[in-house]
Image 1 (tube, helix red, strand yellow):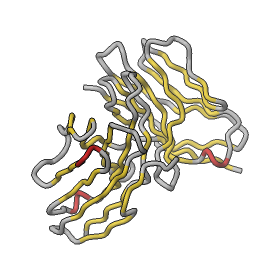
Image 2 (tube, each protein chain N blue to C red):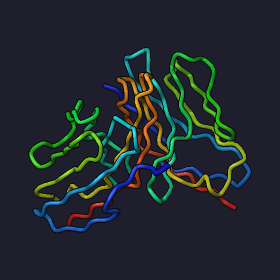
Image 3 (spheres, each protein chain N blue to C red):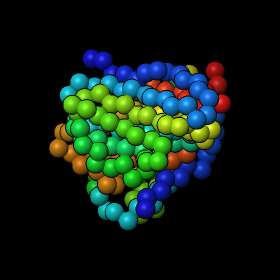
Image 4 (cartoon, each protein chain N blue to C red):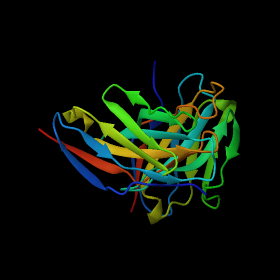
Length: 113
Length: 116
């Protein structure tokens, strides 16, 4: 069975600063995918970034980047130059069976002006 | 391009009543998912469809939950009878088969169900 753990229920960051959200996972598969999703109060989940496990290079999408440590089964999300619009719930998710997402419990990110 | 459409956005019912949720995926997306998201938690997959076939429904409580995806397009999730513990947000998502092992899922806004 696969599990995803987000140990930070809430995080706070000052506008324009950098924040890192943590995620650890467990899977027995060697080929899998990891995702970070953002869920604003409107509830619509939006894909932020994805990482294929076979790629050693960390994925980046503009102000968002990940630190993928495969041996440690760690997948953290770094948000640079935080903006007020980044405030939301962030979910880490694992797909190790082909289009079967397992989500973590989420981290609520607050951005202070 | 229209996203995943769900209705209703909110539903309040009394326990033991039936309820149904409707989802229209993005045009051309052959895979459709139903998730349940309890308050303060991440979504959990209930059922996944490949076209009109349910390929994974192991997490669907079959005694009271049912789903269908006739013609492989839109889908309906039903609960009968509803229980207090069914209060949650029900999310629908869809993805296009691009030959990858994992395809990006696009989510709808969800239906918030409250059972009194």
